[in-house]
Length: 277
Image 1 (tube, rainbow, N blue to C red):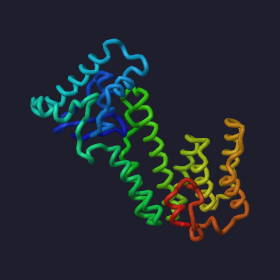
Image 2 (cartoon, rainbow, N blue to C red):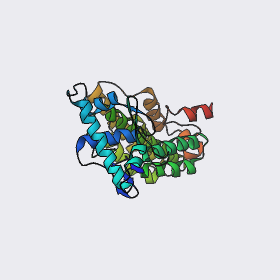
Image 3 (cartoon, rainbow, N blue to C red):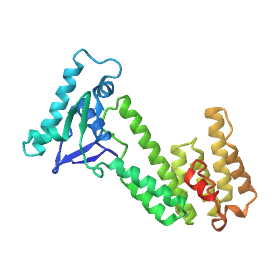
Image 4 (cartoon, rainbow, N blue to C red):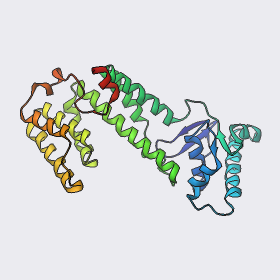
């Protein structure tokens, strides 16, 4: 079995798709894949399907959805219902979908993100950039884009999207350390428009612009961020952003690639902080 969640839901056994067309069974399959090799309680499944108002027939309906998934599994196993029940097993209070550990894309994505973060912490910048690019290349659109998310899956998708943004930010950090500021300007310009209140991306854009000889544009990027904060939140940007603005105004040598001793941008990057301290 191979499962892809970082985009449309795609679950295949022996090359055959077992993704139901009906929205609710599709949602059940997605939740079982997200929690592969763990028992998913019937109460969790019911909450995902019907939130806080399950119908009186919810237990029977859920069993029907499980039966449908097993029939699809059995077809993919050449009609072997026993194999289907082994793969989608019943446990007291819930169900477990058995899968090999490397068969789910989100698990591989998480593994690559951890590896990339560790490489960045060891200042293995080229390796970190490659690893994080591999992780980001796994995304084929928004996670579970074709599944109607309930409260459980919605939390998981939000976590994945945050992880994706974090991996992107860290890959850009690695590329900045490697002196790729010219190539990053257009990407960061688009990202700051998409995330107008995300300070780290604005900081990275400011640094990329400054290193590209565009000091005025770097300062303008700060003023745009400040305007966004004041208009949307009624707040000023953080002291960290103000310090970066002052450093650019003063053309401090510490902003140059050769003098970049610590992560100016990722102040939530614990691995790097511990490596520097």
